[in-house]
Image 1 (cartoon, rainbow, N blue to C red):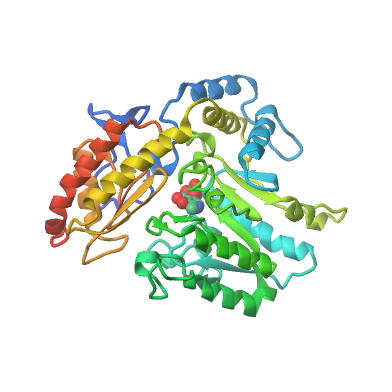
Image 2 (cartoon, rainbow, N blue to C red):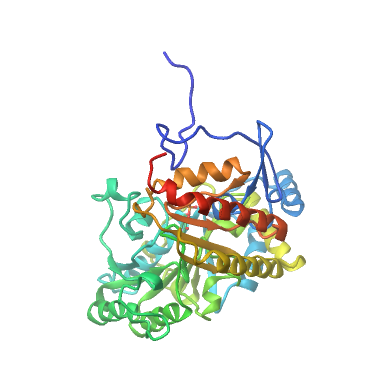
Length: 439
Ligand SMILES: Cc1ncc(COP(=O)(O)O)c(C=O)c1O
């Protein structure tokens, strides 16, 4: 009998991928390995970390909270950190978003939003409005509902039979424009399909879900602000709920607190997670308008939103989130993000015409370099080559197939960020050879 219990690592193919690295310390932008190496965390540990690892304000807030209320269920109970978090979130959220429903990760924040949108219409006596519209290239998480609204991909293929059907419409992938246009002269024609669909079927459609301005896992695709504006205009005109999945884009990632802020768009439902706690503890949140919340308040119990997770509203996560929002107030966070954005623009411009590069793009603290590859896509063989090359060079970068991206914690120094780009320049020189041979 085998007595060992081994970790099954996420998104990992044990037969091909290198063994996991043991991390013994995380501090600022650095991860320290057991074998004595120091890696720059250039992807903020899966897009979550904002203010650097082990920020003292977050560490002490969690320790203090653990000594008072460690955890309590949120059904029928409340506590100070979750109430303080609501107060602080209200200060930064756009428009009239008035209620927040807590869960424990990004996928659950999305599941909650989808279920709320569908039940909202049912509670209003319009149960026929239950279809969901989602974008091409979308990614909203790995649970089955979130996977259903995500685009067809190698992630979702084994579960094709379990996913519910959605209406799929084009996104604004400008350099591969679905309408064959160029941005300088287009009129956001890529949203015409959404317009036609809503015109024809709005009576059956509950919600449109988007990753506002920046589609992350689908390839770091940056949309023009006008696309989001048009989606908001159309959903408002046709009485359809707009869900903004800000799980990745929230908390400054795109240069504003929320990506929706660039377009002055207020969604009906907004999903938050990742950076909510500064990226230190798991927490999800789904924020909604008063109008949506009101549809669930009734002496008729069947209108209740019957959903909840054991760790919903966990006090330690709430304390971390309060501390993270305090850092936004007390430290020059947006200046740091602008400093990162400036270096992104400068260094991307310098490599844009490299023969290995197909496109470069950036928004706020996020930069992406789309590489030329005969096997473009998530399974591109460039990925393992690049991943190992960067680890050997002391940088954690984890390309999405042939799309290399950089999104560091906001406290990265300009020297550290330039060092990452120097290593990227080294890698570009090797890409042509790598794309021809298997690792
Ligand atoms: C836009 C978006 N939504 C949802 C999720 C899922 O979040 P989680 O991994 O916490 O379930 C992600 C994760 O990358 C994401 O990028």
